[in-house]
Image (cartoon, rainbow, N blue to C red; front, side, top):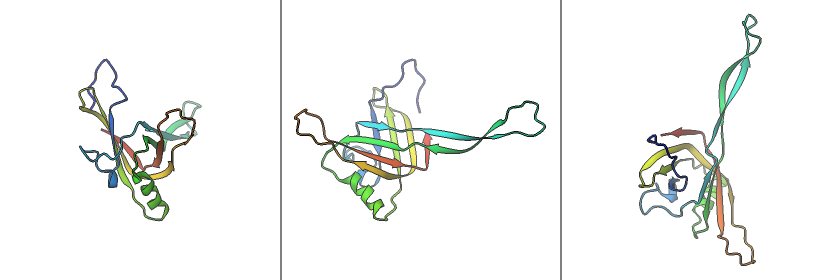
Length: 153
């Protein structure tokens, strides 16, 4: 659980656990670390409602469903086909929902925040952009996935 402090936590020290062939994120089970995690987000939808005898001429906002943002993970290509295989399995008809957990650490490598995504499934995989310019860029792959809920611990 995060401890309140005057300085915000850095966004550079985290661990992503995908389960399945990717392991649980424990020591020695990480296949390839992710350089970027984006899309942790949620939005609540509201309906407007007003009784005919309301005192004010404005409607009330009544919360109803909510939308979850797609999560995007990026990593350098490390010679593992685990992300592509997960998407390929889903594409071929094998549902493989997993709990994805993202843990933020402080400077002493102590966990301070955890986001758990329920029933995450891959939506899109993008391979690296290759160019023979000799610019020295890293070959990156990214995985976009959907999920059915997010909990903050």
